[in-house]
Structure formats: C-alpha cells, structure tokens
Image (cartoon, rainbow, N blue to C red; front, side):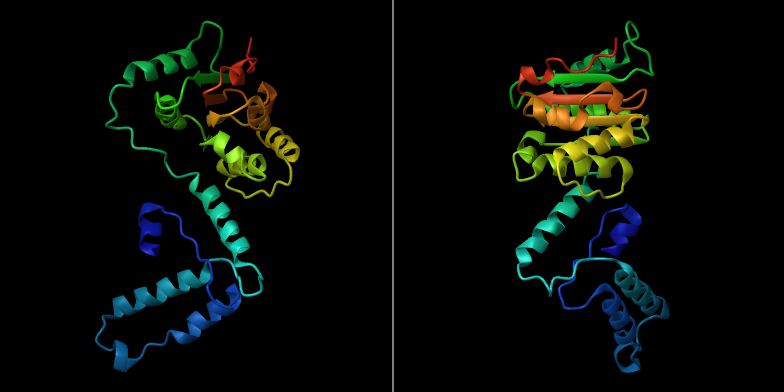
Length: 253
C-alpha cells in the first residue's frame, strides 16, 4: 500500500479498527515492533529497516476511531464520503486509444478557442446536451483532460444529477468541488452557504470545471451560477440531458 502511495501517488487511508487513538496506535507500533534475533535474524538489515520505516509511516497517518460510536454505519458513511472527495483528483480516463470522437472533440475545442467574440481572458460556459448514452461525457472528458494542463485549478464533478438527489447531495457536491480546487476539506451545511463559498474562493481563480449530467437548473446554479463566480480565463463544461438546463447559461458578451 505504501509503495503504491510513494511510487504511483495513489491515495491511502487508515481507518482504525481498534480502540486505539492515533496517538496510542503510534506508540504501540514503536513499542511492539522490536527486532527479535530468533524471528528476524536471517533477514537483511535493509529489509528490517524498510519494515520499521513502513510501520512508522503507517503510524503517522491519521484515520478514524470508532470505538466510542454507537452506530458504526455513521463511521462507514463518513469514510466513504471522505474517500470520494479525495479520489476526485484521480485522472478520469485513459483517452489515448479512443476512436470515433475526434471530429466532435475538435468541434468543442474550436468553439472554446474561437476568437470571434471572446478572448483568452474571457470566462466561458459550454453545454453539451443530448440523450443518455450518446457520448456526451466521453467527449467532455477528453476535452477536459486535454485542457487541464493549461489550468492550475481544475475539478471534474461526475453524476451531478444522481449525487444531487441524495440527502444533502448538493452540499456534498459543493464540498467535492472546493476540495478539488483547493485540496482543503470544507464542511458545508447548506447549498446556500456552499454557493457563497464557491464565489468567494474562486472569483479571482482561473478554473476549469466540468459538471457531468446536470439534472436541473437548481443544480447548475448551486455550482456555477454566474460569470463573476470565476476568475478570468475560466472554462465551465456542462453535460445534460435537459435542454432547459442550458437556457440562460451565462454568456460573456
């Protein structure tokens, strides 16, 4: 696990499965891992040192203590939510070998790069509408990945419609959005608070945002209501099955 974390930048979590707090677990790891000549004498010194370093690294990781909780399902929900937020920054898909989308991707890129009415500093909203299964998300994902190298701050929010239908779903999407941009976890109690925080934190930030499968206008407004929510040069990509979601999206004239 730690080797994958070090070499491949994969994420790792350490939910505790005992009554130990992070501090007591760290102490136990230090005390319990003693080098026994009888058990470990045949191992190479480099191997023993690697074991010790690994256990110390595990002991330094924060996690969750659930012995004091009456309902462990609450802990499971918390771990899943935190994991989902953290994994949002993993690259989306491998697009190297996708075929059949070139012309449509080029069409989207052409619209975004058009200089007839916009400059590179303008904020652009672009929507892709159509029935499910026609490749909207794939096209937008390829565009997003291709453009992300030009943005220091970017975020991909998938399945917006489905996620927003869950309890406190819009607020959770806003938390994921802010974490994707800042890498700092933010607890949001209401969608109104989340909208305020998004505008406050991003109004001067050049942002690339993809909102996948937006279900209605309320969801879009909660995540990207207006041009003045984002810094110059920001691009907001939206996929939806409902044409009415895109009616009245902000236009930089």
